[in-house]
Length: 295
Image (cartoon, rainbow, N blue to C red; front, side, top):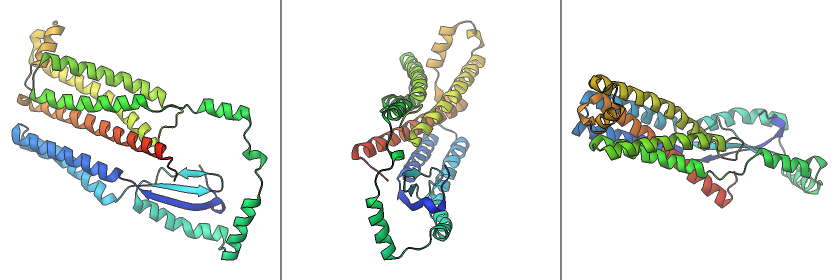
């Protein structure tokens, strides 16, 4: 959306806790990786995985606090989604402020009082009066969806992450079957959530997290195929025995296979991260709606 300097009334910036949440998530990922290295994960692999998380943690800290930035005009408020850090928002505002001043000029206290009085006396224009047909069309275009499917999706992702951790330390056919059911539920809920969020009022963060979950679902499928082929080459006699392959995979000791251990650690951290962020964004969205928050 394009804004003219003469129409801009104010910039409003509010700090958010998203940066701190990312720091917490990355810190937990580092701690889990180091704890696993003490028990079973080879030290070089642990340092490599932890190094990736440490890099993103330091990068997030150096980028500074996160924020939401809004621009106010006489018509409405519009969020500037590209400005997510306080530092970048201040930089843009400081750069644009002189241009706005040149376009609008400077008002004295008397001019401001006169403008306020003039604005309060202006009647509602015809353009501001929406026809019933337009209201109905707009209501049909924007769906009133509360986000229940998204909540279930993020909850299943958290469950999937916990299952991956449990599958590392425990071997059980029932646990393996439960993991397959959870994965199927995750895929089904993800598809429904993507359909539900189309033309809905869900926040951009929830939408983005849902798209990230779709990318992870595709990656999860690739990883599952890689694990299956790895087990197949370890047990070539099970080529024509599907149920036998399932039982072999269920009773495999993941801790004895560094390659599989690395894949399971990645899957658990990815599921917990995406599910946790989705839950956080959903709770923030519900809180703002419940409080009637307005920038």
